[in-house]
Length: 109
Image 1 (tube, rainbow, N blue to C red):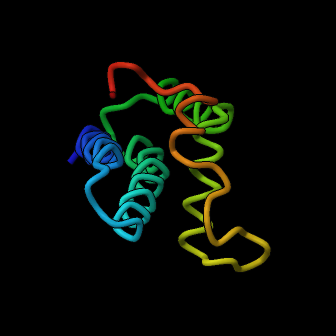
Image 2 (cartoon, rainbow, N blue to C red):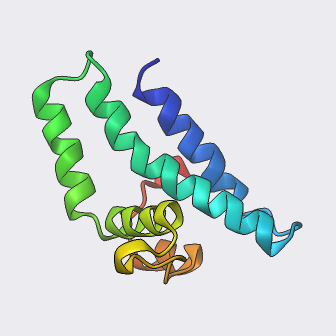
């Protein structure tokens, strides 16, 4: 599979965050999955042999420089590690705050 499969998975989990007809626990599960799917997209891009080095470097720059993606990485690691080494066990910003404060590709929404 190429990186598009992971990108599409990330978009599906992002869209689930708009479903307000479920419990807070289910929302929290979907938020954790979205954050981890977003974090893993970088690895999928770098593992795709059809993407050249320059494009991979652009993706690395995006993940390094985007406030939204930095917050996603931090929150995903918080979910993954559950408070180890001072990593927060829950994200400090809600998805609404992240959408308001950070860039996200309009075509993805």
